[in-house]
Length: 158
Image 1 (cartoon, helix red, strand yellow):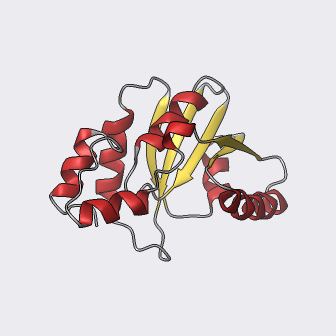
Image 2 (cartoon, rainbow, N blue to C red; image 1 turned 90 degrees about the horizontal axis):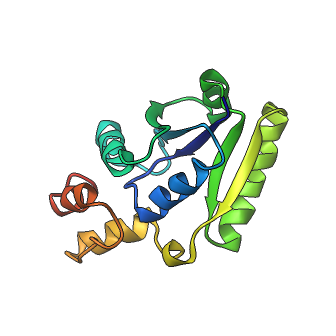
Image 3 (cartoon, rainbow, N blue to C red; image 1 turned 180 degrees about the vertical axis):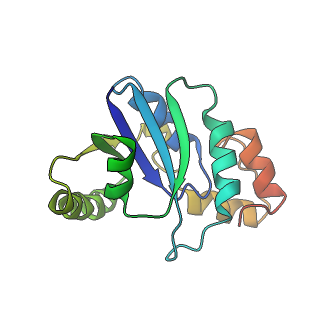
């Protein structure tokens, strides 16, 4: 079984993330969306992010949502992933992710990293922009699934 790990904080998960998973499942038998803790980003509560990701991805067969708090490469090995999936929106994203790819390769040489370019229609969406718009009372319904929009409106995700 070919398994890819799609790691991130997903604070919150948005339509660009969902699109990436929909495309990745065509290449892999199983995609695990690994939602990580991140002391550097100070994300919303982990359980909330996991629950919202499960709701946003429930329509895709072969996808699992899990939480982790270890090195990405260690978690990838634990779940039997042969690849780490990363979405790329900009050249800046690529530069950062390429550095991570090389570090991950130094740690676990047999683990591949797959870059998928974000679909054009989602290339401008980021979790931080979605949170910022929602924080000012803006409508984010075209960027996220309804459950995430409600969580943002209710202040569950900040």
